[in-house]
Length: 373
Image (cartoon, rainbow, N blue to C red):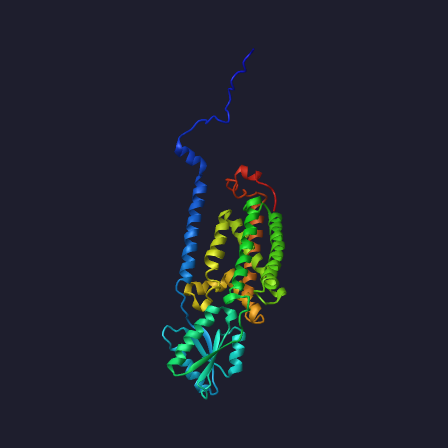
């Protein structure tokens, strides 16, 4: 009987040629991958630094504050005394009467107000815990100590209290963070499936269209969960739905724009702006007057901060103060969409490599990346 000849080609157990361990490392981890890993490490350290830097030592600074009294000279005198407190925790201003002070708190022009009544031993402190429990507690402590030093007491009145299901007024912040996460993940998935950079203007329009549909759905579902389902936010469903749609689209458009400019690195840049810089400065756990100067300055200009402020305004202040943050979000949405379209037009049909393909944009292999939006 003829015996079968042994196989002459490579088998599954054939280890093949080997250049040693270092060669295996070079084959397994490309220079591009190593650079991206180092970028992730830098992003992680920035994340830790930003959150700890913003939250480790909250200190009130120039909190907008109104003072009302039966006589204007009394209100001016009390405001001057409060303005001279060590460290300037308050930015007090005398107002005409109690109704004006209450209106300014409701309009979010100030974060609290002191109603002075010289005929009584106690004055009234108006706070709004719906704007953040930590802020109202800081006002209670600051004003309480200042009044005690004058031999007077304080009765605290919460004129815009957080809902029963909204612990410490944080639900707005967490809702907006969830919307932001959905925005940049949706944009990142489009890059993973079909190339970080859109191949042409039509692809850019399709991506923005997909993002818009996703934003509408995410805005509605987030609002329903936070409101009717969990009872955390008692705000109007339609208004919060519109805000959620704008937040998700703004963050997603920003991510698409950064991907169009920088490829896969754009996803990391979006996380840097939205998560590393945006979340700690959003005024969630600690509203703006309690944050360090840098975080207080950038927070209102970034999507998480603008979204959180607008959500609290819609929920507890009848929409007062929401116009500015909504314009900030609209600006991010328009700018992101415009840059995305410009990047698509500039590529003239040259597709970008899909994330994870290991191919840089512009190589022949990039053209074989999966087609899609």
